Amino acid sequence: MVVDRNQKYRMSSDTAYRITDFFNKMTNINSVDEFSVFARQYWYVWLIIGLIIVIMIVINVIMLVYFHRRRKPIRQSDYFKKTLEMARTRTIMVPEKVKENLLSEENSPDTNSQFAMEALIANNKYRALHDCPPLKYNENLAKIAQKWAETLGKMQKLQHSPTHWRRFNNAVLGENLCYIYNSRLTGEKMMDIWYAESKVHNFSLDKQVDSQNFSQMIWKNSREVGFGRVKGASGDWWYGVAIYMPSGNIVGHYAENVPPITV
Image (cartoon, rainbow, N blue to C red; front, side):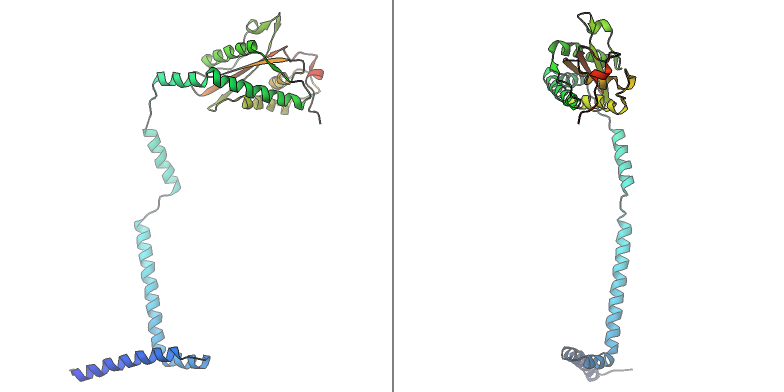
């Protein structure tokens, strides 16, 4: 079949006319009825537009799925697993001299003085809740406490000092101990540890093993105190010591020296 040049020209002109007529009629629609007639007359145009939209949607979905598979997201569990594996393979060796310098800096007199002040304030705050008089800080008691704290740091275990170690005027001084793992021991934190024993203390009974630190820290007849702390040789444990004068936890005197909280 041979189509001459004039016939091709007429076909292209007819197509151009139809397109122009389509847009002219579409822009001159003024009512629902006119739109209904227009839609029926040019139904094939709407069909073509609909097919184009469907094809575009399908193409976009295919591209989205393709790039999503190419770019596989890293799950959170995989991320942490890789991070832990990297951490295990990197071991940082700290020279022993550097460790000793860090320990001595944390156990320096300046930082321990701040610790002692925090401990005294926190101790007296808890004593006030039970209507007990505030304690005075005693440097001599602090030296005893610090010396025993350093001994505990070397032994790396918690135990009370021998009675001859803390004897004064033929009387044994009161002693509270604590240790904490992998966290810097502050004066306030030490007092919080001891005062937590009040939850198991029975104010109607005498000496109780599970709350001796609590009863000593608020013992009404105790008047002076000294504090000490040290970071243990391993670098993971902190040890805290408090020495009280006169000593508390005396059997037969709990009722008048360990009162409950006053309202």
